[in-house]
Image 1 (cartoon, rainbow, N blue to C red):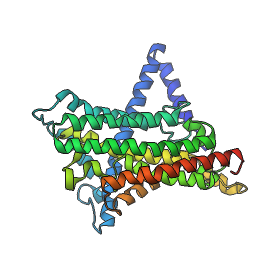
Image 2: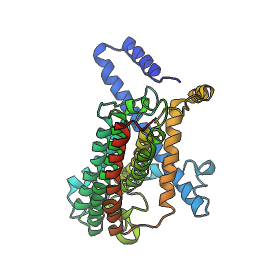
Image 3: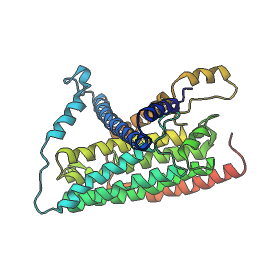
Image 4: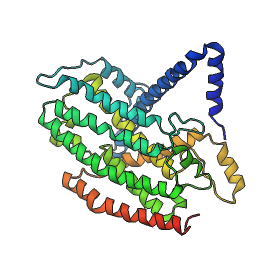
Length: 358
C-alpha cells in the first residue's frame, strides 16, 4: 500500500534545498494550513450537494439540476453568493460576542478535522491522546453556539442555544463512553495506533457484540451532537425560525452552515477510524490473495469510502425519522443510551480480560 509520507518527505527535501533553515518550518506550516482549509471547504461543499441530492431522492424530486452539469456547481454558486452578502448589524446585541461566536465554532471544527488520519502517512495532528483531543476540541463548538444564542438578544436564538447546549453535553457522554470502550479494547488513545491495530481485522468484527453496540450508540449520539435530524431541535424551523443563527447573515451564517456539515464528516470519520479500520483495507485471515488485492486500493479511498457510507446513513436518519421532542431526546440519552453504554463498557472489559476476542 502506498505510503503518503513519501510525498511529504519529498516536499520537505525540496523546501530545504530552496529555503534557509529558519524558513522551512513556517512555510511547511503555511502549506499545511492552506491544504486543511481548502480540503475543509471542498468537503463541506460536496456534502451540501450530496445531501440535497439524497433529500431529493427520498422525496421523489430531482434536486439541484440547473447550475452546471447535474447541478454540480450549485454549492459553489451558493458559497459565492453567501460570501458577497452583507453582514447585517443587529441593534441591541453584544457585538463582540455576536461576531466572535461563528469563529469559535469554525475553529473548533477545523482543529478536530485536522486530527483525522486520512490515509497512510497523512496524519496532520497525531497526538498520543488523539481520541480524547478530538472529543475535547469538538466540544468547544458548544461555547460558540451558546455565545451566538445569548448575544443575539433574540428569544428564538437563546432557546435554540440552550437546547443545543443541553443536547450536546448530554450526548457527549455517550460518545465518550463509546470511544472509551474501543480504548479499553486497543489499549491506546493514539488514532494512528488504533488504525494500525486493525490490520488483521476491524474492531467492529474483532470486538464482538460490545464493539458493535458501541458503534451503533456512537452513530446515534454523534448524529444528535451535530444537531442533525431527527435531533435538530436547536434549529427547529417550525418552532424557532432558525435557532441560534436566526440573526446571522452572510459569511457568519456560512460559518455555522459549513461547521454543521464538517462536524458530520468528523463524526463519520471518527467512527470509521475507531470501528471500521480507518484507512486500513479489509483483511481476512487466511485469504492472502484477497488481502493483496485489497492492498492495491489506495488508503485514502478506504477512508473516504467508509466515511461516505456512514455519512449516507446519517443523512438517511434525517430524511426518514420525524423530529423528536426535547423531552424524548433527553430521555433517549439518560434512560437508554447511557445505561446501555455503561453495561457495554463492562462487557468489553470482560472480553479483554478473558481474551474472548480474535
